[in-house]
Length: 99
Image 1 (cartoon, rainbow, N blue to C red):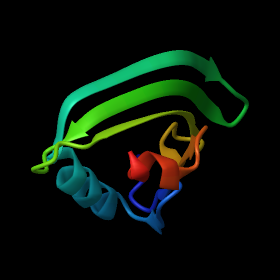
Image 2 (cartoon, rainbow, N blue to C red):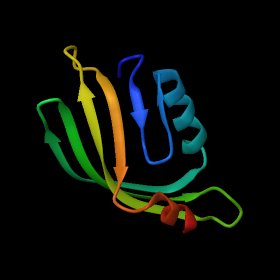
Image 3 (cartoon, rainbow, N blue to C red):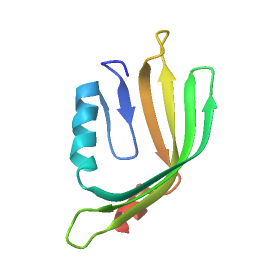
């Protein structure tokens, strides 16, 4: 990843590898029983496109489950570093949170 990489998903968009690491550390520490299945992986002219299915249980007293399918686009620069990491979900994020 490039240091000034742009990250976007249905909830937030920002720039910077340090912020991405902090977000992953915060949310990742709350996830249990994580299941990530890569359904497809395709090299494109600009980078890589994946399709996936994800589920986990959040470490909260009522143990809510999050589940979604979607895809991630990684746009690469000339040095093969990710300069844009964009996630899309195939379901309305509000429905996922409502689970």
